[in-house]
Every structure is written in structure tokens, then in C-alpha cells.
Image 1: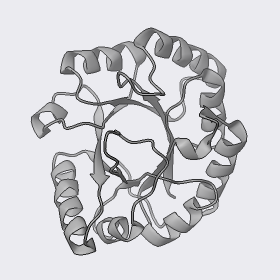
Image 2 (image 1 turned 120 degrees about the vertical axis):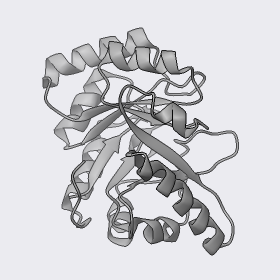
Image 3 (image 1 turned 90 degrees about the horizontal axis):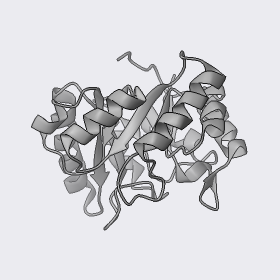
Length: 224
């Protein structure tokens, strides 16, 4: 079954909704200047309330970071009890290996001739997978680190997903995620803007997204 992540969470109530909807991962943004950013103290409070409501067993917790000092990333991971770090910037491979959590490497997919884009993305996915990490494909937008709600050509992801487990992100909603899963057959899917209304998480949209994912045939998922 296809895994899914609800990203950009900013409160315990919607984290609980996401967990109850079957999410495998909950994402929290720690990137300075990002719209959905949490500071460490706020995140600790949200996660404490979430754990009190839902319990310790549940989705894996992901922190999003971009081009931040390694010591800051590891401090947040430790203090918030995060399971994974999603790296959204230009961090080099030796940086990935020093993160004190499993790593999701975000790969930004640009425009251009399909064969060139596929070759570039495949090379970057190989670099992530060879280090034992999880690749995530998102739309490349100038001046943005992701979470724009815009999709890229899914044919690129389809070509690469035939050989590698990857997470598909960018422009997904309850209306199109079933089609995306059927076409790409990704290891997982990721959503943030697609479960928001006027910039805030919408519990109805979170539940609808989870329902479609769980009802979709995404192919056999491999274990981590």
C-alpha cells in the first residue's frame, strides 16, 4: 500500500486528524522564513499535545530543513523526538550522513526536454538511494523550497519510480492523488497545500486525501 505524508502541520489537532486518517508520516517545517515554519519550542509543545492525544505509537515524525547548520538540525531532531529529516536545500552527501535521523532527500524537478529531465532526476535519485536515504520528487520553483502546490510532469516520476522507491510531491490533492498513484505507482505521496484552505490545514481535506490514498492501488510497497 502506498504510504503518505501530511506535511506542514502547525497544530496538534490536525496532526491527530492526519494520524487517524492513516498517515504514515507527519511533517513539520523548521526552515527559517518558510510560511509554515515552527520554532523548536512551539514544535515541542505541539508534539507533546499530539502524543498525549494519540499516543506514542503512530506515524513517523519528519522535520523539514534547508541549508541549516548541522548542529541546529540535530538539536531539533533530538529535542522534538523526530524520526526523519527531510532536507530541502542544497546539502551535500557528506552532510546527509551526519544527520542523526533517517533522511528524505528532496529532489526538485524542473522543466525541459523530458529525456534530459528524466536523466537528471534519475542521477540525483541514485545518489540519494546509494546513501540509504529516501528520495522525494517535488516541483522546482525559483525562490521556493517546495510546498507551492504545483505539480511537475508525472511522466518523469513514472520513469524513475519503475526502478526506485520514491515519494511523489507537488500539487497533489484528494481529486488527483488516486490518478497519480495509478500512473506513477510511487512508494509514497506527500501533500501540504492540497489539504489546506486559505493557507490553513483543513481536517476534511486531510481525511479525504487519506481515504483516496488508502483506496488506491499503488502497487506493493517495500519495507524500509
